[in-house]
Image 1 (cartoon, rainbow, N blue to C red):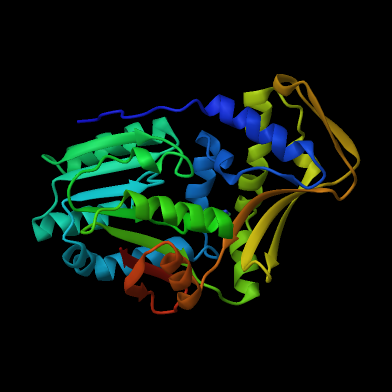
Image 2: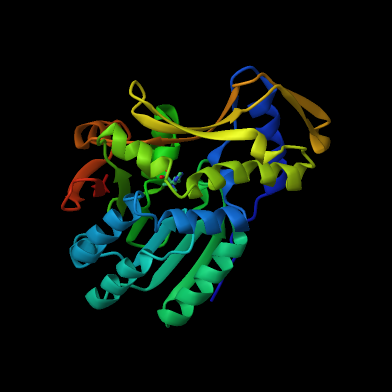
Length: 317
Ligand code: AVJ
């Protein structure tokens, strides 16, 4: 059963975000706009690239630890934030079903198309559990999570890395506020490693990540009637040691001016001028533990893959 609990107006949000992101001197775009149909497909290809370790590492942890996670959470409801295709989630659902506690799955995602497909597939696969799809933005709508009993709220794939420190503090605070005493929070986080490996993961040899990055310009062309030539921008991946994140940028190959019809806006670019399109923060156990603690959450379990590349942590109030 699919229940649509909330809907937002993505077009309005996009217009506002693009106006403020491209209006000033330090240009940036929120990374959530990568994920139209083409972008989601490109991201899916990224997850299978030899250089992109996070997806494989997280899956390896889940394969090994799902039953332990199910036992420790004893969850009746699994809530997945930023659920996407919920591919790895199936490992958790299966473990919770084996444990005998599972009654309900709530998928929360910004993309209604992906959500419809994923919830329908999971409802069929895990019948008779109740499956709800919730369309929303995890930076704005966590207060609308349904208050079912004994929830495990999962936020996988190191999507947390897309938020800066202040954004993470807000996000963890909102998660904590939504939690009852017996709820748990399962977080997937990418860990700090050599800059060479990080660069390779975000600037792969086959150029899939470059295409993924440029695709956000096609989204703006289609949704806002912009005149970006994606080929006029180079893909850049840069480690920011101070912030402990890798950032993706699009660098203008020449002086150019882009018109955005829906905003009645002209955006000038100097040669070499960049738009920051994504941050992907990397963590240590102590750093993440401190950020969670500041929100009133305690690390109950911490699991990594054999190479120590990625961590899953179960946090409790
Ligand atoms: C989906 C946000 C976790 O930051 O690694 C992959 C997105 N960007 N390659 C990440 C992404 C470039 C990804 N997240």
